[in-house]
Amino acid sequence: MTVPHQYSFRKATIYDLPLLAAWQSNPHVRAWWDSGEPYSAADLADPRVARWIVSTRGRPFAFMQDYTVHGWEDHHFFKLPNGSRGIDQFIGEPKMIGLGHGSAFIGARMRALFDFGVPVIATDPHPANERAIAVYKKLGFEPIGSPQETRWGLILPMVARR
Image 1 (cartoon, rainbow, N blue to C red):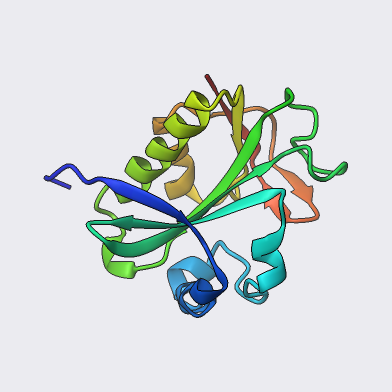
Image 2 (image 1 turned 60 degrees about the vertical axis):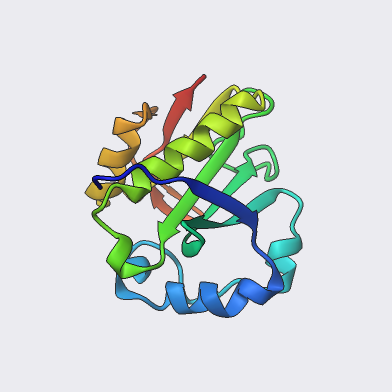
């Protein structure tokens, strides 16, 4: 990426469900994201999770969510400090991959969360997702344990601190 990009985050709405379903059908998303269960209006209404459509230069290209890790008692990040948030995301548009957008928009959202007072941001990529793990490490995430099986699948627990 040679030109700095500005990223905007707007709440995902029911009008975005077809876009999310289309993005989730892409092979590069299906490899790491459960596309068998497309998002529903009920998912978007869940108060534990903030779901975002990410755009640059007015063009939507990615999805991101951040959630309270204390919203599920059996969550693998439940023991993190109060106020901690988990993040997940994917770039939906294949032509936007490999251009530096991932680390840039994730970093932008991390700064916003830390500015809001979040003490720890957690993420849980699949241990074989080397590209995602490299991006997270670049952004300051560190593994906090070995890969583990969760009800959401096999994960590598990682955290970044303010």
